[in-house]
Image (cartoon, rainbow over all chains, first blue to last red):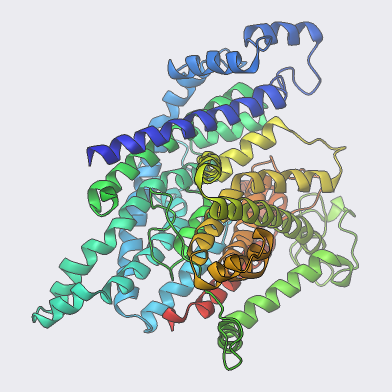
Length: 306
Length: 329
């Protein structure tokens, strides 16, 4: 087990360096880091010279990158042109986004697993077809369409939920959380259904049945627990999708979280905030992925034995 | 590993063993079919076709795809209205015989713009998928066939690109390489497609690599090698035809997912920009509380077209996979 964890940690290092280097190179070497810093017109040469000096752009690429990563590791994601530290801006909005993501995770786990189990047990029956078809629709409709339509129907027309969630209270976040969870609900239901019906054909299930166990016990104790392993890890790595979805959801429902901050930074051409936020989110994504991989090794001992 | 496209692989790949993309060991996605050649009676290919023909889902998705591709190629067939003709005095007018889907905030005909919007989405989806298909297959075959250090190196590079979530990466790259009003339509489309392709090729590469690894030890490949066939010939005649099925299924599903991501990027104001017509832009202009209240038709119609297009590709991939996988019957 220890060997597996260490190997995963070591494998993570090149990915970590590669990802940050690609992002850094794209922004500071290939792209134009002064985009939008002077409004709609190009920056004057004097400003560019000062900017290049401040961000070490006159150094070789590798040195620049190392200096930048040194800042990132110390938690310095740069200062935007309002004079605010990007890290402070993120820290301020972090609780709201976390709340939204947490609610979405609960919703997608409960609904997704229930739907998947029902479909997996009654394979080929009405409920199975219902789940398969409705998840297909959920996956196909882009999240910003679901968000806008939900806002129109449940917010404006029926008035069941607040139309926007500017204060970010739990109650206001209910509808946005459902929207954010919608696609993942479908994936989890499909994953659960596939796992369950696959496992129901396994030898140990036949053995359990032959021993005379009730159907309830066979499914509930033996099959369900095994089928849950990939689902649990999926929920873990789904954080990446939730972060992407949060940009859209927070923009549509006007939630003052990290996603909306990123959206507004794009539109005000606040480059430091855009790059800083994305670097921060990608790092979180990589770390969560790593944790999930390690967790997977604990949940499924077969993985760590080779 | 966790944005739309890669999820689409993971969860839609319901047929095969499950923890595919979440397998921490760089897991194997089994080839969905290995069509046996030379069997006159019933090869897996014709078997799958026979199965497909009986499924209404297949015909529905195929018809939808033909419909939207025709719309993208020849929008004039569907409407004679100029999508750039604005009548401000009729702004936000509800649907009428004159303008079937109503008019938007600028007085543009929503129907005409929805018809012309198909082109951007389909082109981005197509280019991005072609890019991932060509690059991913090529790299995957080299990694799988050569093995050893080229395999390790290419797999690590793939992991790096998989480490950037699709939407976040798309936002970042399109932000640093901005387009302006003068950038030609095709360049913007190409840029969006290139970004999606760059971030998406490793999923095809992994698939191809594991397919090759499964096909390579087979006797007929060994026999061909023993007879002195060149690697090019072995790959072209034996490995490629046997590995393509799963790659094509996943690519079809990805095409739908890329269309969705393109629309999301345009919706966020960073993909295609307003003089261009696209569903993402239309929906972005229609959203916002005031607009939703005043002119819901601006939101509903492009949304239906966009969702139907994505649905068509995902459904096609889904149904073809089921047909290719005899286990599912």
